[in-house]
Image 1 (cartoon, protein in one colour):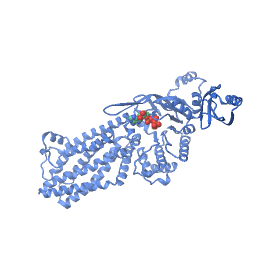
Image 2 (tube, protein in one colour):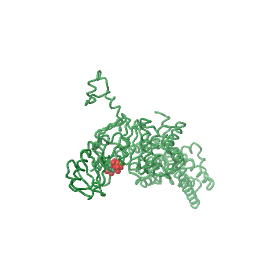
Image 3 (tube, chains in turn cyan, blue):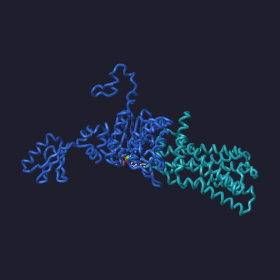
Image 4 (cartoon, chains in turn orange, purple):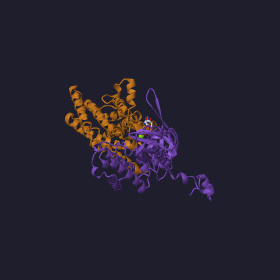
Length: 264
Length: 340
Ligand SMILES: Nc1ncnc2c1ncn2[C@@H]1O[C@H](COP(=O)(O)OP(=O)(O)OP(=O)(O)O)[C@@H](O)[C@H]1O
Ligand SMILES: [Mg+2]
């Protein structure tokens, strides 16, 4: 493997996404507005319901995770969405790069944006509600963020695959379906409160395990034996599946002519 | 290797001493494109499927270093064929080798060596011209100083200097096309596909674009395959053209060869007084006669021979000839004839 070429491909996409992000008017809303609204409204709700500080932390962890995953997955999906919107799909598939360069480059930008939004929301949570993201320690925090980013990668690549498979009319459907999956991941509640079939789905989602592990340090007994390891293993499995699905979708688009249709 | 008159390559190999040592690749290696029986059908629509046969057995060989034109009516399959050659589309059947690579199995290696631009270009709207070129430069493995040099070079070559920092969305059609051409040169390709490169350009810019294309071949020995609806462009630029209609190649050759082969004849246009002479259509050597805009246009087999005969006959009939023009058929006439 030629590492220089690999890195260059990733860098190309990274620079492009970063430039596009810096010129996107909605960037402000994606990065600031909705996450802040989320944390403030959920935080105030915990006050109104007189939740204990632990319970409030439990819910806030969920809100913050949702924002971080959303911002990062959106950026990963930009690997194809930017080109779908500007009808320039064919150029990047004419170039000698693989889909890994597209998704990894966007993922790096997504992680930077995700980390920025996390830092901001952590400060806000601490200032407004006394919520300390560092209470579980740096290592646990690192594992939690890594879990969020891995999930975002999987979801973003799955969206890329769906759009490449069905064209841009699939965009709304793609977002809805993947967000549904996220909501099942025990964002605001432990998996144990879910009815059985739904709980099984939740147990199949890696984010569930990372949330569980992080929350354990806020006084909630872990529901799983080795949550971080399980989360990583599941993430690796889904990452491979999502990558394969995207690859297959691009192959199909080259056969059906959809690649050309999305470029005119 | 010189071919004996009327000889084939295989014959030449048999004649030359040590012929069995000459590998076939020495011939196929001279071809930029070697496509055989390429078939492509688009299937779209749901739940009722619609099938569009876009290519129905296209075979074409293009030598290296040529400028080759693909002509044909709308929907003939030109863009489809170019897309298959450029690895953007996978054919349903047939075999396609481009620069010696199989377009399906060796697409990765091939992509480094070719590039493509179309007359309806589209790039990320909120990137600046320089950023677009740098992005694609990186995708093709350039970085650092070589990348910057390459972008500068392309900006100069395509006369984009004053627009380097302009957002793509703010460019005019002509400038967008120049960005597309610049992008398609970013990897200094050996083979360049241009799909209607002068579409929608004003005459002045079209002339400059054509000059660029001719220079690319001259200075960089690039093989160029282009599609166009402008017959003058094809005549001016292309060494050879092929006519595609309904997914099939109907004819191929230099424009001179095609004109001769299609036997369009030559046109003698006459301004007469009285303005029409119906009997002209029956005169010997006249293939057809049409009246238009006060002119009578007679298509004849051989103008040099028929003009004196016609003038004599008109004189005898007492018809005054006020003006005469003799016109050779151009590629446009060939096109109209073939597209009929
Ligand atoms: N991506 C696609 N999906 C479905 N059908 C397609 C697609 N691309 C082309 N076709 C169909 O295939 C046929 C050939 O189209 P193609 O674009 O190759 O023609 P063309 O010769 O380039 O025409 P034009 O001169 O108008 O550009 C047409 O009937 C067209 O509708
Ligand atoms: Mg076309």
